[in-house]
Image (cartoon, rainbow over all chains, first blue to last red; front, side):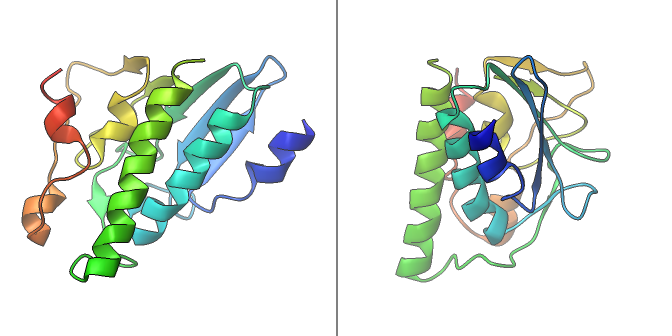
Length: 107
Length: 52
């Protein structure tokens, strides 16, 4: 449990609750309500999925949203789409999420 | 890993679709909406995922 404590509250847009049977619920949210996706969540979710995947005490994960949509709102806040450095960051984060998603399935 | 959808997925559907089990109602909507609106290329991997 020490390991879970180290990242449980580290994500402002993901509420993590784990039961003693090892089932982790991940609820994506913004201020407790429906998630508004932005550049900050794009970066944050890379670390979120990595931390979840590396925790061997978690046996199953349930991913869900908050409010009336899983994900239907996006804000350009925190995104730098149109400079080479900005787009490179977005691309690297996106690729890491795809890689983490496929490897955490392999457990 | 299980996705339990509580509503529409209009962006970044790969978060929901790359899990082992996806729970959804028949009314659930998936879309890749923002890229065209923002004037950028869809690059989340949806072009690969949608074909599977």
